[in-house]
Length: 130
Image 1: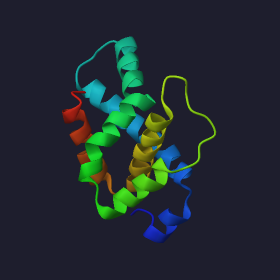
Image 2 (image 1 turned 180 degrees about the horizontal axis):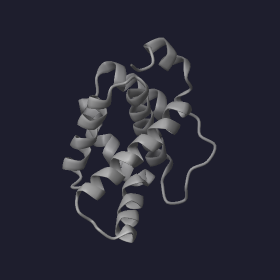
Image 3 (image 1 turned 90 degrees about the horizontal axis):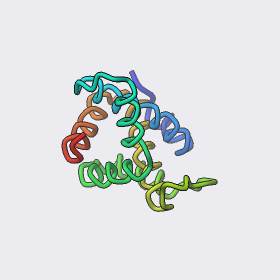
Image 4 (image 1 turned 45 degrees about the vertical axis):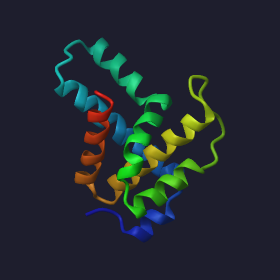
């Protein structure tokens, strides 16, 4: 059982993104390990390239048309959130899109929507050839 919609909506969007960051990275690491890359250094390099803000912004563009109205509202909250700093390797727009992606994954995970999480990640992995 996941959190109720009221409980989820009471959380800050950055708390959702905090959880979503871990969920997304675990999905990436699992996908890469299942894909047969054997050396840890190769797994790590591939994972880092996929979880960086510019790559997450591309992933966000993939799933945006697939989101339900409720998921899109979470996405918009994440995209419009106030962040204190942006990494040097990302533009402000990329960082906001990445935060939005993470917020959606965090929200779905906390809602107990594991199947939806896997569905959206599968669409990303297929579209971006991960």
